[in-house]
Length: 391
Image 1 (tube, rainbow, N blue to C red):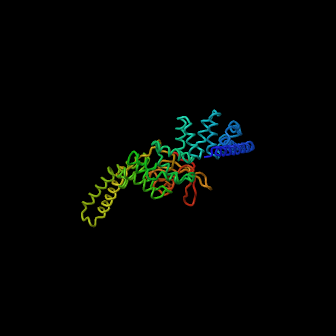
Image 2: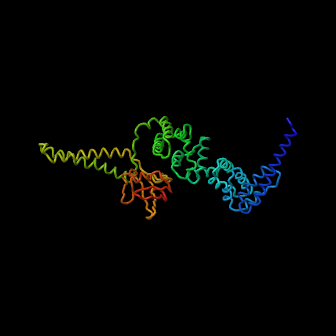
Image 3: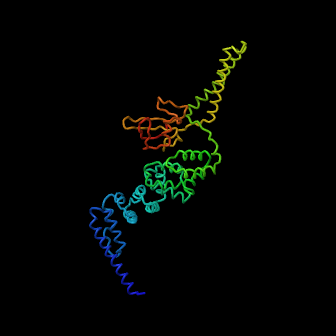
């Protein structure tokens, strides 16, 4: 091997790199006034090629050039943006707040990881809760946190439903493929259904999975089978609960008591009296009281069954993160004033007062929606402005 010749080539390459680096440094100086983010990228590239040269655009000038978060968003190169964040940490007392805000804006997974690892534990936890509670404000950060929870085996409550919501939200269009991959065999969604605490929660997951849009059937089947394997009872028809306010349930109990203790005995006495008149085939009074007896018996049986399945709504335990039974929803269309509707049980329904049963078609369009979502109803496009417990 010609060592001398190899050494000459090395010197030539090094010299060429240094020349390119000096050229980039000069470009950085020229861009400094008009495009500080570009100047930073050029300066960082120049440092790689000619590390012995003075820095063309140092961190102090970058941080003094304008709004820090705006500048960070304008730095396209991931490595240069990471080094800019290192400069923020070194020179800004409010770096924790800036890191937290950049975490919500960041697109690159490596930068997200670098930011998260630098933050104090308490701020990490607060940021995680914020993103997982409202994924649409930071879709890429949400996906990163979901992946992290899968690796660490520490998924937060409600994550399964948030993943299903992400499939239909426009903000996730850029990362929807990655969200769908959570529903593959061995993915996060499968892990989440396997740790469902009980059959009731598992059935909620199954129902949400079955009505979720935007998910291929083979992925849906994979998660469904994992649920059914852990909870075979899900294969049987679910017992349908009747959700209602405590007042409506009490009204139904009073009706049942009145039917059993007053109306049914009174009708039995009337039927016996009619029976004593003889010739039952042509006895109108007897036929009438007998029909009444059948009606009362059927009504009592129906009420008793419904009350056995009744579940009272408690406003203190209603989660207003989305439209669900027990919420008051403010809606707005383009032409009309705001309107408030309430979603309660079938025993509370008063459409003339804008109180709808969750079983109604209108309520079914709203259930599961969140603030900012739009729904179409009777040729109107309605935007959800707010959601809160009904009282």
